[in-house]
Length: 355
Image (cartoon, rainbow, N blue to C red):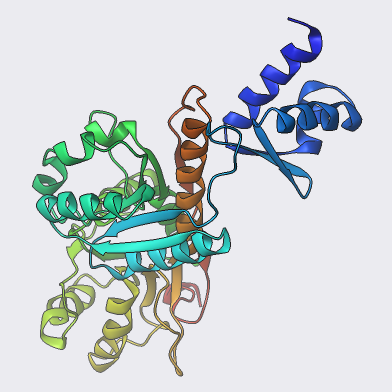
């Protein structure tokens, strides 16, 4: 094989890692001029292996050198959850930006997921994004034989699994919630807070992880655990939140981490009614950053990158589809972790003793 052919074979492998690449990056990778890369790309385009457009190239499925139809279809299955719905909205926008159709199926059980996957594949989906709720460890442990039967790539969207879980073999994109909790406790500690409590959901994998991360962060910082993380009620009614308010007052907490921010929004007036000023007496740090800031108090929030999760899920799916369609070896499984950010507003302030 000539040096040029060897380079072109390497070029195909390089593009195959993501399904697309920029010409300038390829020139740098192979240590050749832009003119050389353009000649290589033109030769591979002529052979029907690459498409060239706007300074980049992408793989062509093995279909006699013809370009795949532009109106390809991506499917997504997700549970009834506001966080997952926002990921789905962003994934839809990204798919449509790439001129792909986007179909969504609501699912809550494995049986529903099985039927939904069959419908989506029958509708011509080139791959699926799967975002289950997994309300309990038992649901998380349920077998997924329907998924093993699929012949299209699947990406886990917004959900993480341990290495021992069968779905660890799938591409996935998640928010790094350990980093999010670390950001939140950094913020409160810098404000002088040491007496911090939390109320966190446990009906999703992120919620169960956040409960563990909160306790771990207190221990690492030498902060007292005033009480175990409280359980955020499914519906934040005054009656359901009353025990949380009572606990905050009883243990003299100067701050509370609340998952999610819809619960935090409902909790603030109840704290005030009980005589605790926010943030003067109790700082409230929310987790999710979904609700609109209120007129008299805007929640400081740990904000997972919900929209970016949807965009990245589509990118991972299309990468694997393009590589498979081009007849190349599958790329390594990708577990992408996106970092939350802290959005400081008016519901947190210095601990009272530091004023």
